[in-house]
Length: 388
Image (cartoon, rainbow, N blue to C red; front, side, top):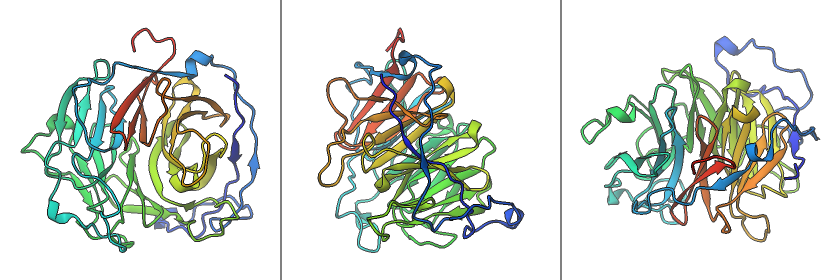
């Protein structure tokens, strides 16, 4: 496949207005003109790499996966643990629609109670059969899901305005439901240090420090230490800026999903309504670059996942555009070194409809996509694999 050049913002900016802990206030940031309030970013092209074949970097659908007898609700997230197990987060009979929240982002369906069926399902990566399920009577509107290096389970609930850390799934059952850590106040949204507003995702470093994308209302990213103490925060809304200018670094219009490229010391966020991925230093939040190509990605980008395998790849899923637009809804593969688009993928002859999240297996050979509508989870594998 022809490698497509990708527009990439590569300037580093001094995040002078970021809240910083005392231990980091004396860090020396790059002394380059511009900053977090800038609406411009240097764009330049970078050369493609040719160390990998097409088969290394193109995906094909695994048609018999998962088990067709399984029934799910509206999918919000998918992740893969370090053992290769596929874990999905779904909403059962609950649906996020125009009646779910009032104009102040308060959840309006509390009287319906939590979802009364298991919302987290573990799937066998080969057979697609259910290994385990858990999470009934806990969540109202599931959103983000990840599993850290110690197998702890992290989730976000946009109705509760909270994030949770639970013990490993192997320890959880109908009577073991107590979280190890909770941040945010139940059903209360806000923008201070103790509250979120529809938090969308969590990403966890190997040392236990973690990031929260907050989210639909607050358009910010917060870094915490492993005990849950806040270290730093960055981000502001691009929603009210001029539509004639592209948003600059640190500006978000729904930071929707997070992924960590730990071998590159990066945290990357899917900036959903700006149709791009923004990557930052995972140490101090300094802007590194953006991944942006409206001709291939379109105007909306829902999720991003990273693998260090195959030279380092980002997997991206876009979404249906608002209004006119002819960019297909699809998965996109980006080389993490050249930042070129190297391939796109679809489920066979049909197109993705409304993908919400993407995840990649530890060996980099399998990629999973979940959709809001229809309620589908797809498995893709790299071409040339013997077993689909």
